[in-house]
Length: 500
Image (cartoon, rainbow, N blue to C red):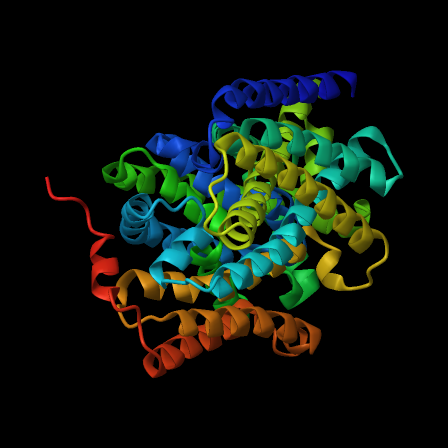
């Protein structure tokens, strides 16, 4: 394992160096620290948007879930692929033009400008939701890193793996800001593709080839019945739930800010092509990796198959150096999301709460705001590490036991809360601040209640579907009962491309 660890360490050193180099520009102002100065290329934006949304949820969670439940888990893929293609082709350009014209740095900045939130209510409520769900989201990534490090190094301590993951991700994010995060995301996207293409090929070869591997999976499906699906259908509820996961994409701010950062909005169509290609390859690569793992192992062979299938395949099937690259691919998936989310929470604290509400009307020096941004990023990392440790060690809730379920809770809460206000604000002049507030509250509450009341378990329906529908309904009804901004039509026109 020394060679595997060495390969992993070299990768980590490269990531840290990128953070240090990016720090030369990230300290200029908040626009540079949180958006890369709106100067990012289309390939970086495309890859960063994709991998920041996939994370350990895909490489660890989806692989493990497919190992346990079979091909029916693939219904998650078309849901988010189609939604994110729509966002790239139609929503992204409108967001990009509007946010530049209104000098918006954060996702919440956009909401406040679009709905003319002069009171700060929308900023405060949005920031609270972001801090809650994203801290949990980062905590899920740290948990994934802990699982990997504990298996690699043979550690029994949960705390050691979480702390090591937090230090690695926290350092280059705090030092390099958005530019470092986006560049490393693009590199990590390539590593993730490498891992999810090579690993299932080698896995099925080890199982005796595609025919023998498929025969083994057929026998598993025959033995376990509907609990393990080989034809990928599943129940109607599971299909609807899988497709519905895509509703989370419009409401996750760490994806939306990618659209805000592109240098040339007209290049978003190219970004859509690249992003969709990557999304499809990553998704199906994860499914086939999970199937290859099930052709090789029985559930009893792995202590925690839902979380450990990828790591065991990498270390069992490859020589040490290549195993290190595979683990680097998994680490890339974890870091590509955790770093983005740290910046989003940090921006909400620094920009949306401190600068725009607490110090409203006062001019802050750019270097002061950047220092505050870095400090708040460090606080977010520490908070996420504490949450990850407590939920791993002390919680009996099943939602915190697997990376897959842990991530989907945060993904759904954000999607149901922010998705309807964002989508309606882009095309509907009657959308109001009161409607947005009702949507935020109802989306968050419904997700939490759906799980806490046991409705997810009893119905099999994922929480994002009822929460998104209720949130959308209230957004429309309350908007129709209240007055939109007086310049609502002008606000919509600000989303159009400038005249040539």
